[in-house]
Length: 213
Ligand SMILES: [Zn+2]
Image (cartoon, rainbow, N blue to C red):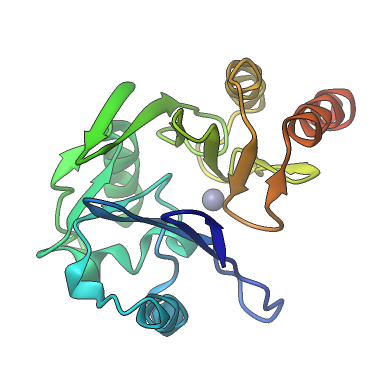
């Protein structure tokens, strides 16, 4: 689905498999955000194919956080694509994966602040809580926020997974709320469009979910 000119959402609707929404920016650089589970990658490949894009043509694969339902397929895309995640998340993954898995390191680390990728500049926000090195990506040009598993339409990410932290998640969400967002693209569930709908969602989350974390 085309969200706006040059931005596509490959949302995941099957309840039988846990997989994430994948987003694709098609500008000077071809940027994929969260490719999802490896065994479900044909879903993404098919959607790219509808746009006449091959996975090998991707320039960047950006990872919001290292849970397998977001990250796993990134390793098959790495080289020629450059794969990026935060340094904290890479350390976290290595701790949990252990030395049995020889995971290739990211090609670049996502640092807090502007991330120029061709004619698109995203802003990286470190948003720990669901996972220790989680990031959200804000695209000021279109007031789009990619939230990974920090917030969803009507929900928030789990904090009971390894190194989850409710206080940190609240702080991360409070930071995001200050951004001028018109389209909220979360890692699972429905897309949220419209400035008022996005603000209403933040209000709901703080009023309802904050008492549980
Ligand atoms: Zn997650």
